[in-house]
Image (tube, rainbow, N blue to C red; front, side, top):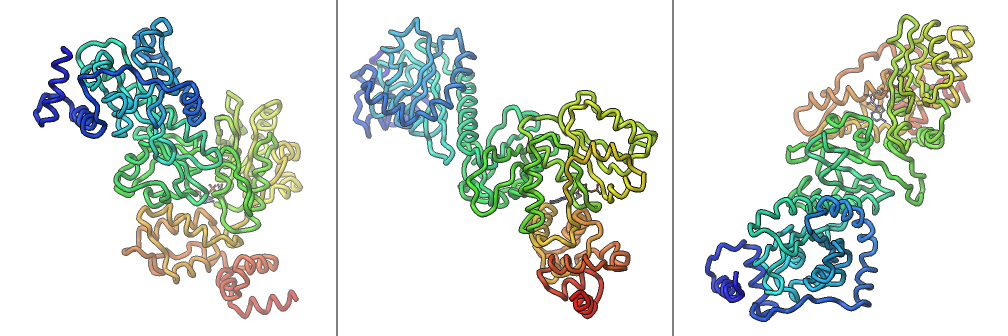
Length: 573
Ligand SMILES: Nc1ncnc2c1ncn2[C@@H]1O[C@H](COP(=O)(O)OP(=O)(O)OP(=O)(O)O)[C@@H](O)[C@H]1O
């Protein structure tokens, strides 16, 4: 295109004539003339800031440049040999980082494709960086799309990089000094630059939110762990405190995400995040959005602890295992201290108290991605106790009391010299089994380096917290418990512990007709008669503590009447 034709076309666009130009380009041309007073017939060379100004721009973007550098390096290697130049411009349009072939240094510098060049639209006219900064969108400004005649040989494709609060922080641009005529020749460049900008945002979010949960999102399970599409960071209360640009559209188009709680936009709360950590198959980690769509999620636990305020921060998924219950908090702190060691652990507790859940949470505290091998001792009848061949990670021995004598011998032999970290569970008093000669003492000491005791549900003081958490997991649509239903549930004895509570709430959520679960929606307890048969004396005091001293509630939970509780307490002095 001749210079005169270019100026003429800009003139015609200004008069409202259709010339076939993209609307983004037309709008930018209009701004150049009407807002910035630029003249297309007077080409102006590249605008380069002074050394001192460049230093100040670089200092202000120092952290982002450092993070973007590896992404830019990877992108430059992908386009190597095709004469592309890569620019990182800050939010003011100044080039603060640059990758290009030094053989063409003079040409690049003259064209403004160099450190310190200022690509703001009001100075350089329509250009990739300037139009991207103005619109907040990825753009290709190809050859005569440029307003200034000085730039019309160039082809520039630029994508915005947003900071974790959603502000446009920088622009990534790939440019060519000379390019083929069709604009579509830059479609691949557009995909590359968009992908790189997304990855830089992801790396920036990870670096900025080391003490918070990060939830990565993908529409396909296959790419969830290798190349997620978006991510959000969450504080301990589940509020969204940071995001990548794509998260907005992925989770809640139209409503600002920052400051919202996770359960306002998805069916999850922050307590459910451990279920989305590495270790579960990606296709099982489904997140349902409030608008009915579904995504796959990968949760990353806080990497570094925030300064403790009140309660110490528990690593990984441990923090989501209990609410305000001093005994449970003490147990979890002990588990946290033992987690990052090779000490074999024996987790004791009645059926359904969450022993396996605790074992998985301890395993998740590992910083590597080693596997969690489940070995169900009930399933190995004839003395076979095969261990995983690769010998790495955690060996979870479920229900060790179920091993017969022959299986105990085989397991003990296999564990000799084995590098696996053993976490075993038992529902009974394994020490008594050793004393009775039913469990080998040498195997007992091999697997029980330290013991963790999970209390039965009726002794937990965080039952309200558990009810809310399990109800959220049981129903996607914000069902709540009536005061009567809550009181009924708190008065039960729960011999099946958390497993029984979880399935009771699941059934109740299905049976309830409105948005509130009432007493008549609750399935009756399955083992009521058996549970109320006898109450040991020491249980009485613990139950009373779990019920906050409420004697009527303690009596109902124990299946006796209030006067019995009173009489026994008097007898105990
Ligand atoms: N802290 C918790 N919050 C919510 N659900 C829990 C929690 N702990 C356990 N559960 C649920 O309770 C059920 C039983 O948990 P788990 O399998 O860990 O218990 P267990 O003590 O190993 O049981 P068992 O000894 O019978 O094998 C599971 O469905 C689990 O998801």
